[in-house]
Length: 373
Image 1 (cartoon, rainbow, N blue to C red):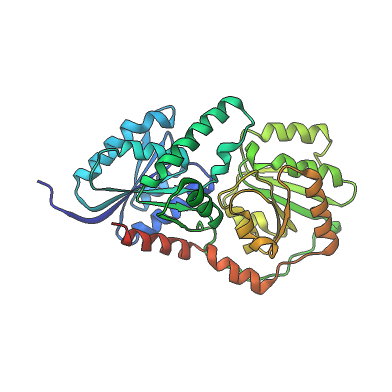
Image 2 (cartoon, rainbow, N blue to C red):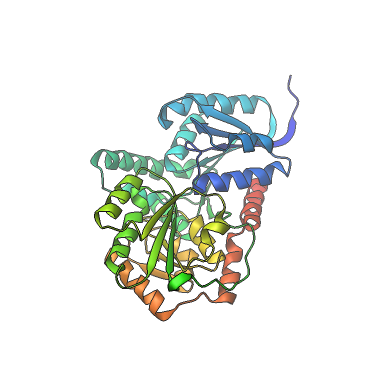
């Protein structure tokens, strides 16, 4: 007969464990909890690209061999039951992103001794986008299920105050908190930027190249001001929308203005000697790259979209807004930024960035995990 295990078991379930912000946040939290004697298991569907590192720091990694998340229900349940049989001091499942949260709750139906935390790392507004009929029908089903099931979790954690208020109001969820993601390790001091050759203006985009990320809006804005300013746009990221953006660049003869840099881990090199960062998403959870731009003293322009963008730029005190999807509005904001030579307020920048450090985010999670019963 198994004796009681004194460790607190944490099971993270994230279907797609790639290079996005959700994966980064979970990895940082997993490392933090491993160092504090928690037992950590991470479950994904298919390949976890961080498997080698996660095993090195003492985590268990499970890659479910199924084609889609819906088919993972019974395999996920089997892994959870196995952990419950180990009789840990406590077992907590932390699922990530709306559809995974629903699958997690179904997988745990009837199981005793498991605590369930839903985290919403994107914005549920994405479930209302109507760019594809079949996808819209699927998303509306997920939205309806989330609206009726989220209240059954022991706790819901959102990535921003905006999302917390949305879920609390629309889904009638009482047990809900918000924790900003661990976007930065430490706050960087201000530094003098090297002047670019021939007064060249450098604009940067960092993120996945998915349709909803809106990178094409940035390229369209650049195409409208290419003769007004000596500038280039550097795009850091990968995704299925990349070829469409490349086709537009070719069509508008922007090959000397727009450069695709791929995915880079070293954020300090990405942001070095850049003038302006742009986020153009239709919706957001809370974008790490936007926080990192401010931490690297790069002035940001971001879309005024559902999610945490407004909170990162302190409601316009640390950046500019533009209307999501409106390249003309973005063009005006880019020209305004360079004309006025806008800069970040140093004191405000440093004070605000304290909210987005790894230490603050991880400590908040630790406090919640100690309290949850």
